[in-house]
Length: 341
Ligand SMILES: [Zn+2]
Image 1 (cartoon, protein in one colour):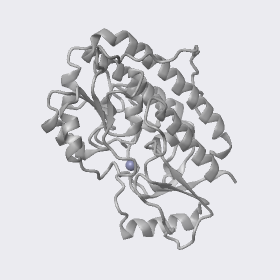
Image 2 (cartoon, rainbow, N blue to C red; image 1 turned 180 degrees about the horizontal axis):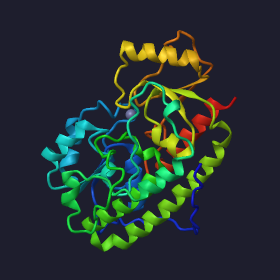
Image 3 (tube, protein in one colour; image 1 turned 90 degrees about the vertical axis):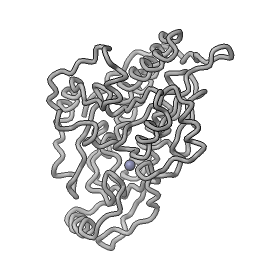
């Protein structure tokens, strides 16, 4: 388990750059945790909108007319990327051609994990490699999509020798906001992009991003401690959406009913899963109201003892700069409650 570096954090509070004289940038985001990161950089949630409604599935949403108008007025669209929300890609091209599009999964230094194709996850996990993986990822310049290349042209983001080349933005598991280190990387990028839009606030954005990063690292360290006793306990996911959280904090899903794209499981998948669970039963099932998957019966026919509902989109939280950290804590608490023997 990686030890988090805990930055010394003074009693700073974020400075809001928005005031009556000078409106801040209008930023459209895909999901609430991303919107919250933007709000942390801006100092408040003024000007930030989130497209995905609280209980919709990000994998299969479609844009509403009122949201299309919102998109047309955006200075920037900051989103995870087309592998998470395919419904947004074309809309950005058509409705917000002049907005800066920032697919965060393509931001250099973002840790990208490969999609889990196998039914069972545990046997392919390599615990103890985590630190090394992460070091590697720190040198991973990632692959930009064309839009991102254009936006950052000439800004010194050199491609270096990319030994994680096999995992690019298109083939990576898109649920990357659940890795706090990614949030920290993205805060810098968000500050940079917003500073391009409102150069007069560049320093405030950069300072806010730094304070936010410190808060997130402290939160991650606390979560790491909180999960210390439940790391070895296997659980089943209703939807394969927590790989980054598992990577960051050392908990490990045994398998998932629905795959990374939240697709309805095939008969074959359910059959294999049933066998898997017969060999290695789980006592906790993590539901996910992203997928609206509220009730399940295990393929083996037996009901598990405990259920948890992961709210990894920040469901139930008030939208604003605090939502990202509140979401992380909420997800961690759900794990503790469901896994505790
Ligand atoms: Zn998902």
